[in-house]
Length: 479
Image (tube, rainbow, N blue to C red; front, side):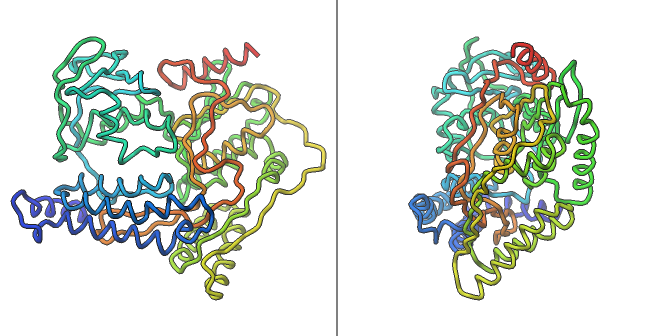
């Protein structure tokens, strides 16, 4: 509540007509931008990374700051402040460099409909209120003389789209027709659809009401770990791997135990591992879930084939970040992950004492010569992905796609830069935090910003638990 009151006060003092010295949003934005730059310069692997892959990162660190500071001079609101920080962070083309806001916008303006799509030609209404003037299936042509491509270029590309992941651009259509109710950015007024031209009926809605509607319309699945049988298909929903606190850890442990207890029922079944909306977290939970289904021997066998050689960026701030991760793994009870983080922490402290900016940890693949263990699952196993799958979710895909009998279905995933394992740094304004990576992979199975294409693509239509289960059943019958 204190943060919200402070924000309201700043909105008042930033009124039109104030002199430059009296515009707090400009000063706040400039201070936070400089802090982002300095934190990344001093703690992120890229600024001291000698590999050619780091060159674009180094350029944007300086050039992006200059561009963002020019934008900061025009900032008059919280929303403009937020977009300016997102512009700078987004330019690194690294999903692990991002801004987390400590202040929520509680009220939105929206048009009563949601647009989705997967290409430049299929921006289509996927959900609509009765009085919105459009209906599901109507294709967006233009708004105020700007086509869908121009609308994305103006309203989402600079802030939300990693240009190294082309298909991710079109997952942003849903952002075009809502914004904070206090946002001074002009709203589209008249839009042409395949069904005709309409004057947009903007209305107010609470963020807490709108967000579930956006999630459902975009085909995102369960919000909690869940296992359910739909017809003859077992749908296992894994919406996140972010289990870091006591209650969440207990839920994750109970879920892993429940999966293991269902081994008999799952042995010959059709299974869908549904990771819709899963943006990552702690990858050790993904390993635990896979081990509950295939057994630890299979998980270890696949993991031995990965080259996990990394360079850690050495700094006092990063040591503090590692200490936080050690505490999390102690709480989670993930013993192997805890040993990993303890080892990294000890090595980094030693490297700091030696004055080294980088800490190399060699972890090459281990030859696999022993015969494979028995395959515990004899049915059909599908991994259903969407554009949200990133970070630890991609680690899960690295593993599961290499386990016997698994087919990836659905939509293409997101992608990670080679930098990973994050820490957070509070920005001077107190309104936001910067999240950034501590290490860089040298020989990861996936390249920089490389995504996974599904082996079988979603055929279209509304994505729900029931539609996924029905599709998986048809796929299994056809094989």
